[in-house]
Length: 479
Image 1 (cartoon, rainbow, N blue to C red):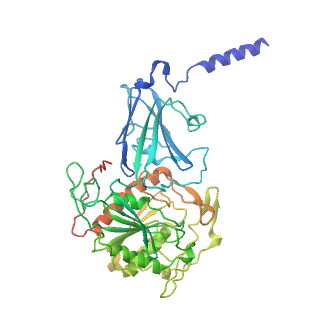
Image 2 (image 1 turned 90 degrees about the horizontal axis):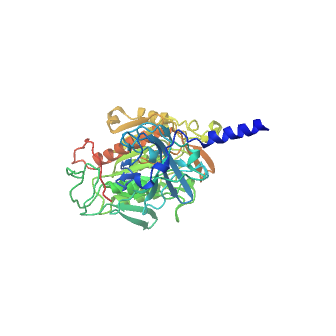
Image 3 (image 1 turned 120 degrees about the horizontal axis):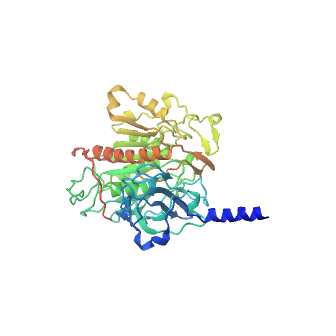
């Protein structure tokens, strides 16, 4: 019995010792710790500076970021050690442990993932772009693990709220109900000072731009086989100086309910209507399509001469899935090979299911449009090699208008910069978990780099009288 008492006594002594990865808050008042984020309100594609001051010399801390979108909660964290001066500067110091490692100024944003109590097969989508994404940053004592952050969450030493916008407050959103046409149009303000990155604005030395009236270069934004209206990317493109039409094609309001009922006539009518608006420049428009939206974008550039620039984001470059309805004759699709579906613990992998013949690729070279293909090499939904074959088929005298950028370790859902990586999620149309692929860090690199290329591509091809400005500068939206 005495031996048991001694063991218990020893155990109580050991457990009462302070953990080496923490500092004592008895000598540190919470008011001494200061967390600052500049700017604390910005567009989602802008970097912020995160700094913590008032810490003990070489004190270990964890910085946590959290947000809630509807019923979903996403979080991230990084562990840092303060300098001799008691500071942590996220953009200059390494995260030693967390959802990201190393020097990553925006790691707290792009490495977010669903919290343990939430469904894991979800994708973070901003459904109401008239409101910001509110991100809560907090400083916690010690180097913590992912499990330590929840149930219950630790008491923070300091907190700050950061607002991230897809839509600049000066951009106007209009719902489109024009005959059969549905969607939303985003228009930059006329004669209003914006702080944009686009080269067609004359940059000031402070990173701003001169006042500029419309009309604006126009872009149509298409998403994929999930249906409905996605307008977050359109809002952000408009915040960078374009007039953008977010164009749904099924499962939205009174549009067709399913993908097989999508009509090419509807897409052509919508594109010609948008290109003819007074606020859209008359020397050509652009179009961007993700996944299935890429197929429609390529076919539209063949049908509508006003389209001068096409961006495919892991876009389908051949006629896929179902026949495309058209008044001049339906266009048949490439065979989908059901026996090639691969089932994984994270979802179904479809990249071996599409093996189009050369005749089934869309002959976009018959148009006058320039085409930029953005592809992730770890895409679990579409093999990037199909787009390599698409480019091989382009006639030699037309190849100068086509280019492809490939990103290793990037998956299918390449979104604007600093968006959390979605490796797999539930597909509401097909009622399966889809493996989108990608590795978080590599995917983040692809999102940041491709967004810059997309803006430059549209700016160059939709503003022929302007020279492309390749200088690097930091946009300051001043929301």
